[in-house]
Image (tube, rainbow, N blue to C red; front, side, top):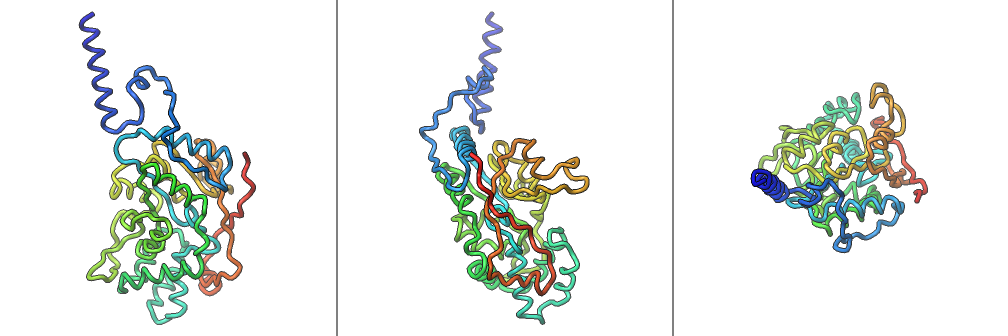
Length: 323
């Protein structure tokens, strides 16, 4: 009997150590394998207008379940199509091609190369860095910010901004991981969302004396590179991860609690997800699926497509949410 009690005490001590290292459950919960009754009174959750009652309930449940998690509480988000609308063209492209249209003498060979590629290919996202290389960081930051002010200012999804606010109010670190050039996005994204610049991670290049170079800093946050970006720069698995496309899949699946997808693709792609659509895959895996309004602005210049023939992104008009 004394041996049994000693072993039981050792097990309990080990559980206490594990919880102190960052778990989200109580000792009694781990011993009994029962779900504890959660107290939602300490959770600061403001219902998000534009999300359904069911979505709000699931989000509040997430905050209740994570309120006592020890250590850093991290949430990661893609940017284009997840926090901000991407129709008809990515801001990363419209800002670049608008500048190229007005400055045709600057690196025409890079522009020619870019227009032969898919604008979601990994060598395309590094071509963007090649184009901006040699310019002052402040100049490129301002080009991104000016493009935002002129053509994208109203395209941040209000629902997602409210979610960021709820996360911050409940002690979360919010991070952005994007395949767009970091220096183009960090200024306007930080100003609009309140997320510090050092938590906005895009495709990086080495900066020397305030000048961008074409030396790419690895990992490139594209596809599985987004997962490696979390391990390299954030160093904590997120409790919530949100994206909108196949390129965010590996990042979303790093989440240990809530996996979230915005306006997921509902068309089948060959050999992708065993014939399922991305939306089917998300539904089957229990992700939180939400819709945000992403339609082209009537006065959008569209230099990306009209002049340089880069494909347009698919619009996602927001349907009525089901309760």
